[in-house]
Length: 94
Image 1 (cartoon, rainbow, N blue to C red):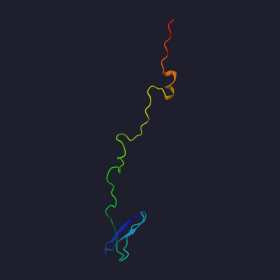
Image 2: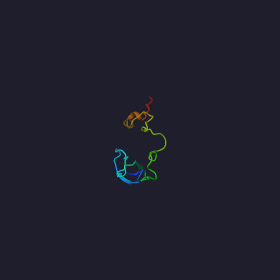
Image 3: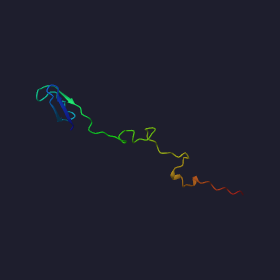
Image 4: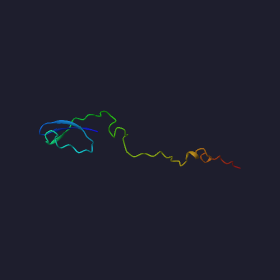
C-alpha cells in the first residue's frame, strides 16, 4: 500500500500515513482540526533506457499478423514426390 504525506494548512503539522488506493483522503488535522492538504513528492522510481515503451519491442510497419507464404504452383508437400510433378516420358513413334 502507498504512503501519503499530509500537511495542515493552519498549524503546519506534517505526517505520513499508509493508505489503500481506495481509501478516501484525510481532510481534518488530528491536532487542531484544521484543513489537511495532500503533499506530492518526487517520483520514487524512474525507468530510463529502451524497453519500457510499447513501441520498443515492435518492428516497423503494420501491426497485423502476417500469414505464412503460400505456394503459387498449387502443389502441396504431399504432391511433391508424386509422378504428377515429373514430366511424362516421350511416346515412341512407330
